[in-house]
Image 1 (tube, rainbow, N blue to C red):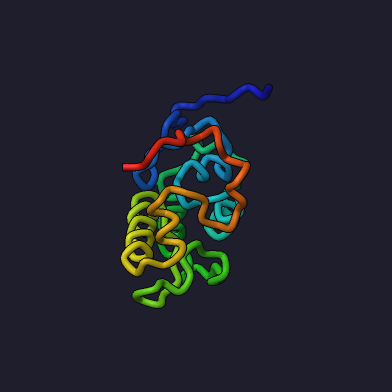
Image 2 (cartoon, rainbow, N blue to C red; image 1 turned 45 degrees about the horizontal axis):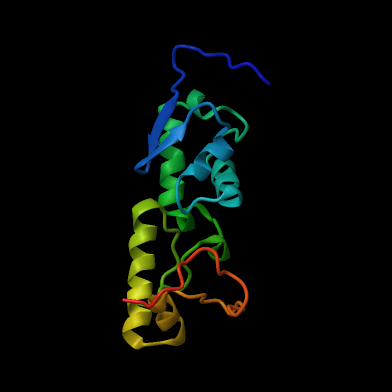
Length: 151
C-alpha cells in the first residue's frame, strides 16, 4: 500500500454537508460518502471546482472545500447538465436539482407518502412492504422477511 505523507494541514476527518468524510481517501471517492453524490457526480464536481480528484481529501484547502460545496449545492449554475442531476422535473416545482444528505431522505419520504395517498400501484406496494419494481415474488425473496400475518 501507499504510505501517506502527513503534513500539519492534513485533516483525518472532514465535515462536508452534515457528513463525516475520511481524509485518507482520494477526493473523488471520499465525496461519495455524502448521500446523493455518486462516483460520476463526484468526478464532474472535482473537475468543475478545478480540484485534483486523486489528491487525498485531508489535503484539501478550505477554499477548495468551499468550491466543492458550492458546486454540489447548485450544480446548474456551474454548467453541469440537467440530465446529470438526481431530481429531475420535481413534481411540485418542475425544477431540476441535485439532492444530497438530509434533503434526499425527506424528498424520498414525501414521494412515498404522495404515492400512498394517491393509492397508486407503487404506493400500495411500498405500503405493503413488497417488491415495487416488477420483480417476481412467488419463489424469490423468501429469506429476508418473516411470512407471518401482517399487522
